[in-house]
Length: 415
Image 1 (cartoon, rainbow, N blue to C red):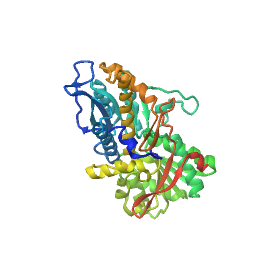
Image 2: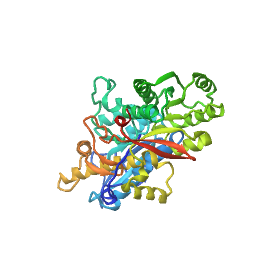
Image 3: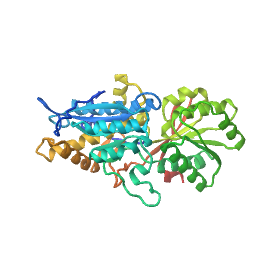
Image 4: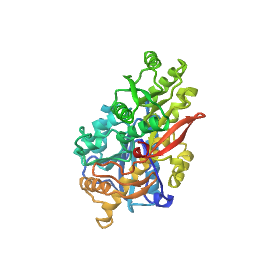
């Protein structure tokens, strides 16, 4: 779920960042944006798994947004406005995410939210934000139906004007992976597995379809459950299938165990997955068994982008937990888009943010739709569906215990 192509840091620092707290300032009694004696305080929510499964990448989202708010406040990017971050843990559970969305929209100082990580969680949150006309920008969701509707393959229709994402979709990611597997790795027989979740199942389906279109053979498909630990029967099926590649749609928790048990059984084929696997935790959990495994991730490598260097250094200097590599910079850009939209609303109102929170939220939604700036990950803008216009993707492979970029481009480059 990632991508990039960058600009100079000074242009980024003027765009804003957040001060991360467990609870942002609240004023639920009225309908005006928070107003302190020194100016206006506005809250930006962050929803992600901050504990348990997926927390490595979830924390990267939280602290990516934190740095963005900090930059905005430090550089007084919206004069008279101080931004605060309210971070809530959805534990990768849809019901919890929905509850968090209700908390955000009920905060009369909140102007928008960043997140979630999981596409399945996003499905339960979208209507809540839409009903409050509050913008939601995910730095990680990739399921196409979130922006293009359930019939996206035949009749694209945007379900919610309040929902955006700085990550590209599985339609592109799955196709990119299939192209690299067939034309780059020269693999001809794939065994495809998914975790039955919105993200994983959708990604696996697209890989399956595109791999066969290119001339490859999908020898078998199977499913696992999130939380499973023993994959003995699956390993036996893969071993007997004659596959020269295992493609997995899901997160790093299960895939790390699958690749370890697969290699321990003597099946020396690579496991290839999506950005849900792109975390240092995958390599740590799988150990030497991860060597040679691959993932696709949105954008270009963060550490190659000039504008992201200060972000990475700040993340490390602060000692923030989690992994910024997958979605941290995308969370920064999502947060920046919200802050820039607040500034646009203030500029159009004589330099002051609209006092009515509902009016401000509406203007922020419109402002985000018109986004057009250089961020940490490249140009930040959105199409008519709320999808990022940045379509770059990267294939990473585990080499000597670390993720190494091996191919960057678009799906068309590998067909």
